[in-house]
Image (tube, rainbow over all chains, first blue to last red; front, top):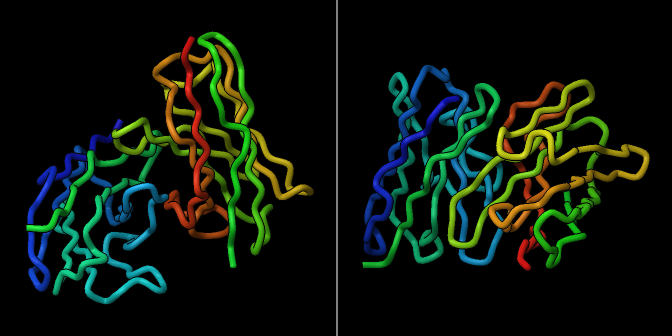
Length: 107
Length: 120
């Protein structure tokens, strides 16, 4: 199974900050990676697909990148509506697996 | 607008069975792989099962106990859950593949979820 190690588990930030969230795959997954945002009491929402593709309707403040088996979600100019938990997911092979999540909290 | 609406959750005793349903609308249901993903209380996300036109996959944690199926004529996805355990307690989300056909194994959109509680 492919393990997804996400860091940090939580981050405190202020409105206007840049936040980076990292995800490392235990083996090569090419660009088969997605990022999701989940707000309390809500279902997850797809933000980024194929490591760096911005899902339709998602703010351009969100971006994704890849370096080998390391993936990064960057949120620029953090807004109040961005405070949420973020998950990475590998879409390379079954079983499909998620990172443990990163909670972005208000400083 | 694509919509997925789950139903069938509830309180069930350990060892018993429950069947979840999901109705999709706003897209050609039969053209997409569909998934169940769950989230335990205060926990992360766990993929449970997948079904496409020719492939079914299960997480090891549910293999042999859960059965995923679909009825394209009814735009419906199902999850038959047998021999339920306390650790199966979670919100269960019905999810559509982002891409049609072979799919991308990426999830968009998600239903609102239905809560399954396994307890005596």
